Length: 206
Image 1 (cartoon, rainbow, N blue to C red):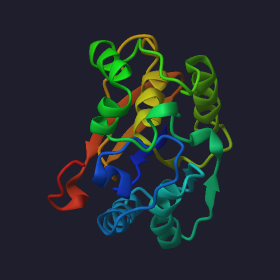
Image 2: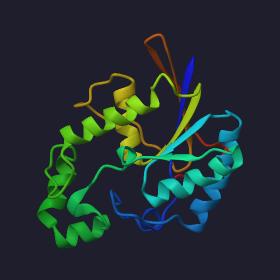
Image 3: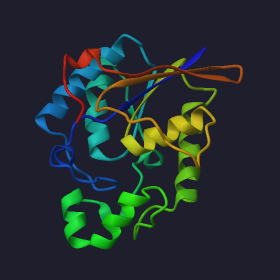
């Protein structure tokens, strides 16, 4: 039995301000650093042998306490970067409404189907996602590995892992620093638990 633990990064300055992040490189807040420490203690229970992370600082900063506690080096890859939101990156919904009203209203009506200038091509994103998943599923990996990543990326990754319809809904909303456990063996893939947050001691979803 092999296991993958997924966790979204801790709260960032952009999360706190309600801004789209994508590939912009925002740091963690004080609360985000606390969440990273709490996550590290929870991950230690599972004794993972490898920790993967996006190359964006919010992901690396969240992963570092766990890596230090377990004596592991981080495996950093741009394959695990967040989906690029193009024109939306760095903006709040209110700013989008004020600066790009036509786009704002199209997004309200059809979030998945609306073209966003500068956004990452969905076919390219899925190819990148599949390469990232292949790294996590590699036969030479330890029995348990961790990925510290990003909300939309992890949502799509879980859809891909479970062989759900990629063109359909992506229903998995990852909370900051929560733990999701996946298992796979002999071609069988299972979601064991989703968004486990008991280690966060009553923190609200941001």
